[in-house]
Length: 615
Image 1 (cartoon, rainbow, N blue to C red):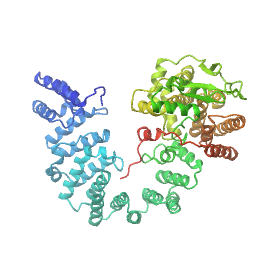
Image 2 (cartoon, helix red, strand yellow; image 1 turned 45 degrees about the horizontal axis):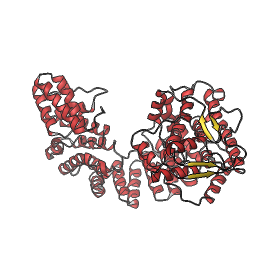
Image 3 (cartoon, helix red, strand yellow; image 1 turned 30 degrees about the horizontal axis):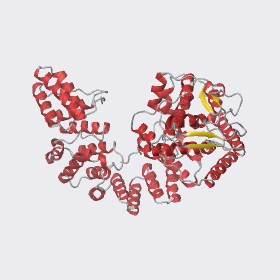
Image 4 (cartoon, rainbow, N blue to C red; image 1 turned 180 degrees about the vertical axis):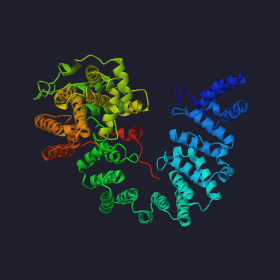
């Protein structure tokens, strides 16, 4: 759908005026194009529908002006739907409206009189109506957020009218129940589904009834209905997964896993059962290996029956599995206070026993320039020096003030990272896939982004981060720049590849946020490629052991994050996992102040895909 207009009502008025002008001049094709634009912006505006009727009268129905192809503009699809209804073909028109709803569920495409009139239900075949309702449901979350329900109310009115006309049609009642459930009408959903099962007993009828009971919190009734569905069709393994999920939601994990095992015994590759089983096994024992095995299954079976959210659900909100970790240390804590007080840190001072990570210093001096940083000592090993001499130097120091050695990135790189970077992702393989947009950038640009991160974008996410924790954006840029390095010259064998060499240099450089970003990129590589897992696990083990050794002599601000990264790494050895857990336990035991509010939770629903759809 075209963008760029700030006021949808105003832009619809403009499109309407141009459509009327073209219609008056007899230019029907231009009139149709502008009417499609007006409908896309204001689909319920009466003047738009009046002008569409004029166009239909002038063109013998108008259908030829709104043909359907693979890339039809949504406004043209909706225009054709209304014209089909006007020419006595409302069933076809409803199909197109349902397609528009699938494209943009929050828009009132169906809020027009011909959809909600009771006469329409009398004219439609009940099975066709049921298919329309199911088509709409397939595009909706369960439940639909309250703010999005008004746009879908006309379909519920259609369902009420249809059920009134055909009160004993099982398929129609079940589909109507599914829609009612999604729109928060749970009691109505139960009533319709129960009536459908009584009228025409069927597996799907019991499934719809089970889902309705589950939405109402009536778990025992839901399980009873789903068990009846299994009895009616023992070969539908999706119902086994549904029962397992329902049992797990009530804490009955052992019973839930029994159902997944029953399904897998019938078909070891059935995607719903595999996804559910791995999620429940991880829920039971917390072993990362279950999630890695699920990621491998997803990679090896790209043609699953439908989209699944089990891996994303397990990774959601977890450090490095679903989001970056907030930076720690007294310097960043002082910056957060300065941001909260909106005083640029004026008059404030932070005393540090050793030099802070250079990215932290650069972020603080740009965000809270009034904050004074005092370094009271130079403990060994010097935090301003790379941990390995072979590592590429990114920073020069004047006393304890870091300055980037590398040139700034190109404008194209800045634009590209602004389109991709964000602080959360569904799971590591999804982060890898999303970073493919950075594949065209060269290494110099990606390294330049690490030490010259651009300002946060002027959108809702950028404003939220600026108001709570500006360091999150900087860390996000660094994470995605390193993920971009993973896509550099992927034809090179891993062991001798440029991407591995550059990332290892960054891992062993100065202790910095860049260290974490580079190590996350390596961990992500291990998630998507089983062949590199032993190498990455070795690097993770060595880097964490080094951080732990240094921490015995001086503070290591990135140690906690490195521990979280280790626990997110596939094929990690038991000793390193124990060391990571020990570092985290030590951190928690020394935590005396409450942790700052984490804005990432508010971002999660914006940045991840919805849950898998229920029928």
